[in-house]
Image 1 (cartoon, rainbow, N blue to C red):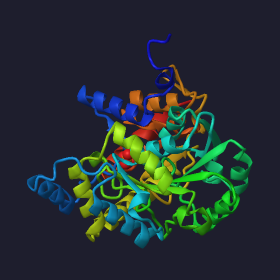
Image 2: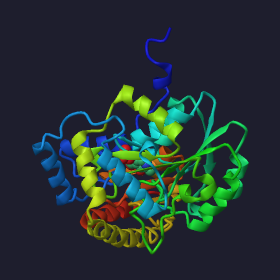
Image 3: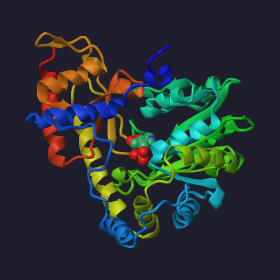
Image 4: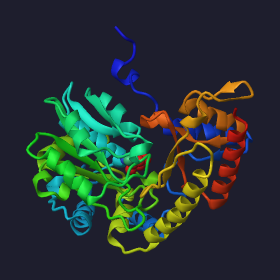
Length: 397
Ligand SMILES: Cc1ncc(COP(=O)(O)O)c(C=O)c1O
């Protein structure tokens, strides 16, 4: 008999978390580390949201709320989906959880049986394959490299579908690539999914961080998919609230009911104070998101232009989120100081050792030719980081 769970032993630590932890440790040891691994905005949570939380504490809004979320927040989530995404829900369609990660896990647990196939594309968000393992499902991954601007086609989706397909996880804007699918592209996926018994989990956490006039389109708003789609979203990225841990899922009542039951035995309700803060975020008008997105866009323009000036680097222009995902495979096989660059992990190790620059290897997202660099950091750090990147790559031969 194994001493530890075989299932949990098969799960890897989140590599994005691991890189951030290593960079923080090196910094604590006194090294001048520039960490580009962050998956969170470098802005503070807006004041009005913090004030709502303080008020909640002072009003003793500090006890358990209903497991599925407190009714006013659920109403606010319903209104958000209706006004912004054209999705129509009732309270029974909603579950508020401890972050979008938790929402996704609850939903996958609610729909998957052992051996069910879960389709998603690579580059993917790190947790999709690991969560699929946790529900004893099988990941079916469709590759989309830099030459396709990290987008899959409807034909590729069609080809990946089998009689065992249970779920298609869709993420636009994407982490790690920043790719955004247009309405027409999404309608083409919808045609493929029509009349098929496949659930769509649409991870829309970066919906508000979108550039160049791109418009976020919710796949669940397509009439013939609305009974099959579970839309997940939350406050982490849009409102600079990663630490508050609030996400929500909206979908068919039978799925949400199971997910609620699971949550009732694992975590119960998300923190009451964070729910009050999220209610303020969703119900009060603010231009802080627009300001944040403007800053992200300026940084993106700068960083993409600079990266593409570097010999061998291929960096498509991301249309959303706050990451650049660029191909560095040109450097594989090259050496410096007796160190060989073999893959995205050795590339990142080299940069960390050589120039104290922390990037995330693309292999964490299912693409070993690339690395991810977050630009949720100051312009000064970006300029310093790019300078160091130049220096380190210049030594390779
Ligand atoms: C695509 C994607 N989905 C979900 C999450 C999880 O978000 P949360 O912090 O709300 O759990 C993240 C966080 O990085 C993400 O990038």
